[in-house]
Length: 364
Image 1 (tube, rainbow, N blue to C red):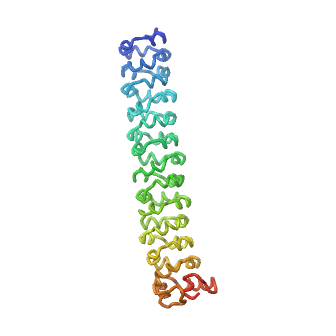
Image 2: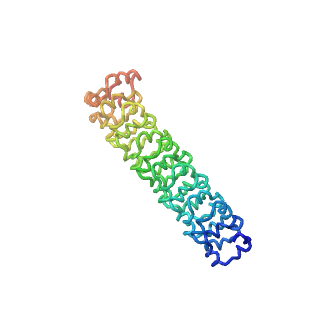
Image 3: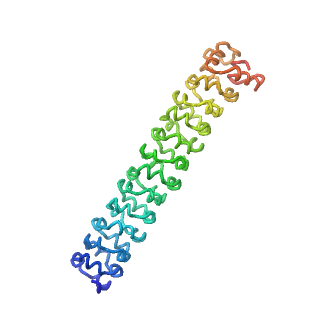
């Protein structure tokens, strides 16, 4: 066999190729192997394929690789897999990749994985993706990740997701993120979440958002918080609300604030209450106003008290007609709900005769 030229090999009968032994193959050079036509490759036995040494592998072109049958591809050892050049790997079809073993996948180095096209990667199933080591995952391009199907992504475990760079995370779509399980989400870091765009964050459901720990949510900047939809906030517990930074809570839209349940409002701390904008305070529903604790009401600033609407003030001062000043019953009701004499004194000092609902009620 060693004496055959590339031209002779190109014209060898299929039956002769199929009869080649591992010993005969071992005597051939990489140059000789390069003479085989793509159409001849499927005649090689799996034993012969497995017997190819690393020097011989160098002679195989990508077109020859693409012609290999599934059982031939599966015959490659992990050592052979690691020796393939990126040009040779480009010859593997998505169907061939689909039949890689987990051991073969683990054998690929980061440069090899990064060289695969998005079309090739679509051939990997969830099991093969799950087999990748974290060092391999780090080498994947963001566009490769962006083109993985949601069913493929189900195979990635939290440890793999945790090592993705912010650039890699930026490649994931909102639809992909929407399919992440709680276990997968638990692996994400605050820095990764902070790198998301508002379009990506839109993909999370209320259940997924509620699953994230406050240490993870701390990575979300004010712009991302502002993009949260009312429906996404539904699943958050009062404890989760209490864990938000004052800047995060102050970034929520007025619609989002108004959508919070009374149980969620109960979680708002004194510092968070003080951080709410006047527009947010004015957006609170009458039900939310009535539910505020005495502690929460006692920390409201003059500007926040002045921003309360007539309807909000009447939610507690139920007998007030919105024009009578110093109405005893109305003032008493608010005092019972937590407003302090210090706050009223501050209201009085802020304006000679205020026109806000609260100022009119207390005659300040």
